[in-house]
Amino acid sequence: MSDCTNLDLRDLLPDLARGALTGPSRVALDAHLATCAACRAELEVLRKAHAALSAAPPVDTARIAAAVTRATALRREATTSVAQARRRRAWGSGAPARRAWLAAASVAAIAAAVLLASNLRRDPASPGGAPVVVQSDEPAAPTPVASEPTRPATPRPIPDAELVMGGGVSDLADADLESLLEVLQQVDTALDVEPAVLSPVLEGDV
Amino acid sequence: MSQLTRDGEPSDAALIARWRGGDERAATILVERHAPAVSRFVASMGERGEVEEVVQDTFVRAFGSIDRFREASSLRTWLFSIARNLCRDRARSSRRAPTVVPIDEADAMTADDPLSATVATETEGRVRAAMEGLTETQRAVFTLRVTEGLSYREIAGVVETTEGAARVHYHNAVRMVKEYLDE
Image (cartoon, rainbow over all chains, first blue to last red; front, side, top):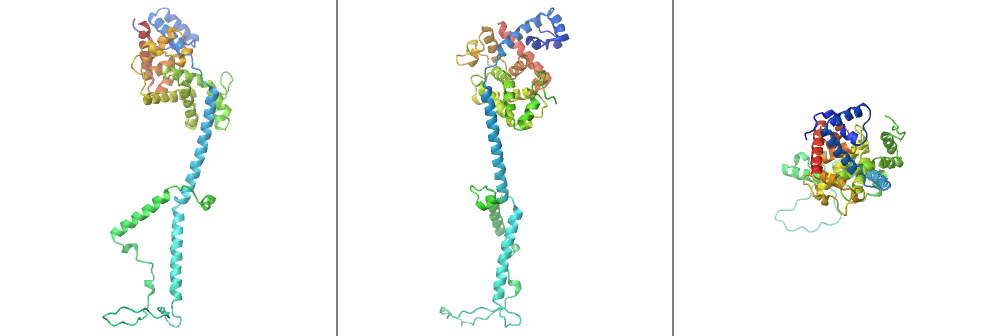
C-alpha cells in the first residue's frame, strides 16, 4: 500500500491519534479517512505507538526539585567564591599601577638615603663642599709587599653626576637585557598565581 | 507575557520569574509540570534503568542556565533539547547506542527494565522494539510528534534541523515502525 499524498491531512494523524484534534480539521480528516486506506493504516500504527509510548516511567519530582535547589545553591556559592578569589588576585597581581608606585617609592627611598649619606660625608669646611674620604683612626692592616711604592690615599672629589645607583638600562648588553626581561617575566608570572593563603593584611584590605 | 495558563495556573514564564526571585516552590511546580513528559521522552529515546537520573540532570542543567533561556521556545521544548543531548552523551560514553541495529523483541524488554511495569502488552513491546530500529533522530522526531504533539517547527528546534527535514524524519520513522509491526 503506497503512502497517501495528501500531506496536509496526513500530518494531522498524530493529533487524531492523541485525541487532540477537533473542529473543522477533525471533520476534514474524518472525511478523508473514509476513503483513504493508507491513512487508516497509518492511524492504526500511530494509535499503537501513542499507547505504548505515552506511559511515563514514574519519577520522584520532589527529589528532582530538591536536587535543583541544592545544585543552584552550590552554584551560587561557587560563583561568590570565585568572585572573591578574583578580587584578591586582582589586588595581588592585577594592580600594576599599585606595584609601580611601590617600586617607585622604594627607588626614591633608596636614592634619598644615598644622597643623605653622601651629604653627611661632605667636609663642611670646604667651600665647595668637596667630599672627603673618611679615614679610620685604626692603623691600617699591613699591606703585602708591593713592587711599586705605596702612594698616599688622596681624597678624590666625586662629582654629583657620578651619584647614580648603577648603569642605565641602555648600558646593558643585549644578552643582559634579555636575561633581565626573563627575570621580570618570571616575577610577573609568579604574581599572577593565586596564593594559597593570603596574609591577614591582604584579606583585610579587600 | 501571560501570567496564567488556560487552566488558571501560573505560566512557565511567571514561575521562572518567581524562581529567579528566589522562590524555590516555583521550581517544584515546574518540575511537577514537566517531569512526566521529559521522563516519557527519555524512556522513548531508549534510556533504560536510569530514566530518573537523566530527568534530574535535565532539570538541574536547565535551572543552572535558566538565565540563558530567552523564551524563544517553550520551556518544555528546551527541556527536550537538554534531555536529548544528555541521552546522546550517555549513549556515546557507554557505547551502547542502539541507533541503527534492530534488536529482537525479547531483547527489547528485559527483567531489569523499569518500563516493564508500565508497558505490559505484546503490542506495546513490539512498538518499542520497532523504535529500537530507528536512528536516534528519527526516534526523537517520532516521539515528539506522536506522544507530545509538537509541531515540526518545534521538533526542528529540538533536534537541530530544518522543519522540512523534521517532516522527512517523521515520515521515514512512521514507515519503518509500520513495516516492523506488519511483519
